[in-house]
Image 1 (cartoon, rainbow, N blue to C red):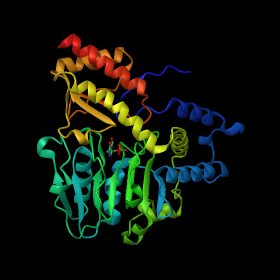
Image 2: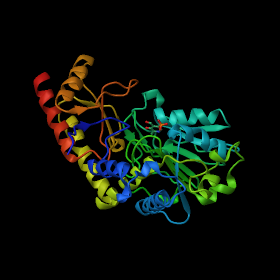
Image 3: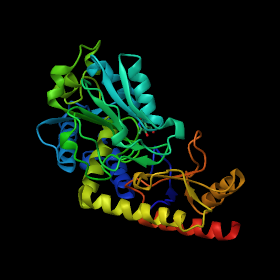
Image 4: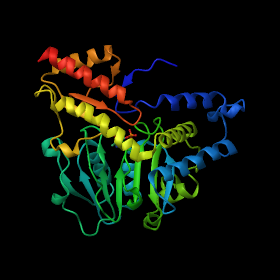
Length: 359
Ligand SMILES: Cc1ncc(COP(=O)(O)O)c(C=O)c1O
């Protein structure tokens, strides 16, 4: 087996070793056929089977039925900030602005129509997400957009809001817990955190949204047309989709999303407990504890110098990718599904040791 260290990068991020091994084998020789899965036509029977199984497994994992379509598209989650309003913003859309990513989504929509910001926590540097009781919802919104896990600021919505047309950016927590997605109008997320390599965006659309679509300049940008063509209007990112399929198989073998939620909560608790018991040496950046993310854990050390030393010393101990996002600073430990519990144990031990030497 190859040498693997603990990679806490926010994305592209660590993938399960087993998935990488299976994908590497399929890249070289798919099912003993003498060619790799990335070397065949997307219209051929090998890739069609991959695509169909990936769609079925995805639906099963998320607990969604015929009411929704599963699409494997391209352009990163950022492309969907624009495609969503391009398709669905008629009169007015509601946006919750809770961090870097939902702010970017709202800004993209503002270029295309009327946007109502139901709440923004920017004044406190997005150290939390405004509670639902304070949201100023509009009566007639075409849809309501939220980001369920703010990757940069390290907090999440503990539960999803109720709205007839809820659209959720789940990029940094897709398939990390069993959300009630069957109620949502749309979910989307770049694969590069929890689901596979960059280059694939997993999009789930409720079919009753199609009649509400505006005409787009290209079929490529229309969710309905993409669904009718099983995401194959043009060449899809075939190898990326293959890796997603291996991830879905792996998730099933782990016991599905309820089991992942438990594992992720236990992993996150190892780090948060270390922060909370450090006598203030480590300070979590999220002000509302119930909103602390189980995927991106953000905290600060007493000084910039100590933060730099922490990052460098962790790297020497085979823990990389810990530097916080440039606008937030401090440390960000991203512990997606593929991060083994041993990685969180190692980080927690390292943090305790570092604090005892430096405080
Ligand atoms: C929550 C969230 N939304 C959107 C994006 C943008 O994704 P992409 O780089 O695939 O456009 C990111 C990237 O980190 C993210 O974390």
